Length: 455
Image 1: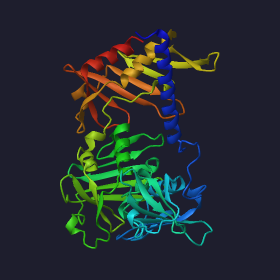
Image 2: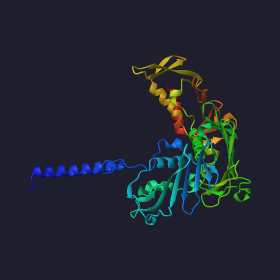
Image 3: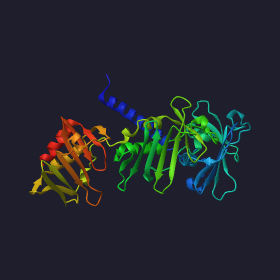
Image 4: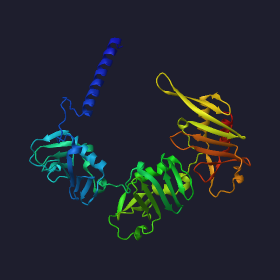
């Protein structure tokens, strides 16, 4: 039977061994061999992103990719002249800057064939600002275990290895490094959005407060997150491949008469126009930017989103209300108008503490949480149906609303209001900046009506 002392000693030895393994792994992670010596850099490239002005990848048997930094940014000059993807090029430059030698195979080897370096698989060249000759790296075969790649510098005889995951970052095709954005714009610069397609035509515009509204075929509120989602999808749209670099005849792609178009009006007054045509295969579509002859193939996600039509982009809640923005409001119900105002004081830590009171027809301090909850409820009432061809207000009971709420935001933005009615057991509403009549979720509308009557 082992003594307690022996058990403790064994546990201590195991703990020391585990600590040694952790220490060794940590040094490996930081690029330090067991001796603690830093791994040697392949190139001395300090601040490479600003100093590198040209970059070339020359894979054996394939056209070389030549990239040049211009005043407008990175551009691919060969095998074709097109804008380059700046983020992809920056990643390549960062990889070169951090490139470290794993192991030295030999300082001077007479035969490079066993390492795939007599005819390198790939040659990477980088030209620095102020230099006349580029730095070059030759890449050969993988090591037998596949974890590394043999490499050398043309100017030196020694052969060394590089980690495969790093060396693999230079295995890029021309398409990988070109700018694949089909319509270039920044979402924050987008001011108008016009869409045409089988589902109809509509237009949206963003106001001075940054809120989106439908302006055609009728004036109605748009859902902020729905429109932002569509704008984000357009901003991030990337071509999956190129159908034609220079299409002179657009008919084969159904782009002579596009099936769908999206016009993007920007803050500087310019317009970008995306045209979408036929489907060359399942879940793919031809598309182009109207000012370009390049025809690309894009995934179907954008087309599926556009196919949902205007209904998908409408504001599907009664009003989006951020209670902290509301400085006051008016409630009209049962022939009585009541006004409410918010005030604030700072606590010991300088944080605003809000208080609400009724100011007319009779003053009274109110429970802040009760007011905040009522305002929050406005954004929770869902629209079940839109009536765009509006009959007379009496058809919806809106000639005599059971509630009218007007929200005041001070100088931040214009007031917003809605009127609520009950007709034949259903709740209807109309709201500011909207020509439609809304049919609301009944139980939630009932709760909302009760909450404001009780204030």
